[in-house]
Amino acid sequence: MQLVVIAAVLVLAEMGQGCHLNCYPKNVSIPVESCGTTEFIHTTICEGLCFHKDSVIVSPDNPPEQKICNGDWYYEVKYIEGCPVGVTYPVARNCKCALCNTLNTDCSRLQRDIC
Image (cartoon, rainbow, N blue to C red; front, side, top):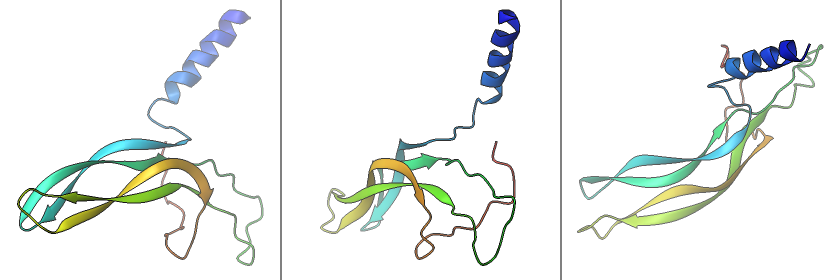
């Protein structure tokens, strides 16, 4: 029986590769341009999926609460050598699943499977 349980766990673990239902900070490089010069800036963004369970009954009057991967942000300024104009870019301090704010985010559902 233990062998069957271990085999099942290994199969499930293998299936989950490449799809993470969590929200985490990720280091990225983004290109920025100032004074005709482009440089790459290293920053942190929030990435990942948040668990969502659809209700059996969906009503337009009471839509399900959608959670998205978001975080606390601050902004830094980068000056490119030889250019007096700075470039402001966002940096994620931490990331968490939070309710989607329709005032500044497209909260529509994806129409395809992610995982």
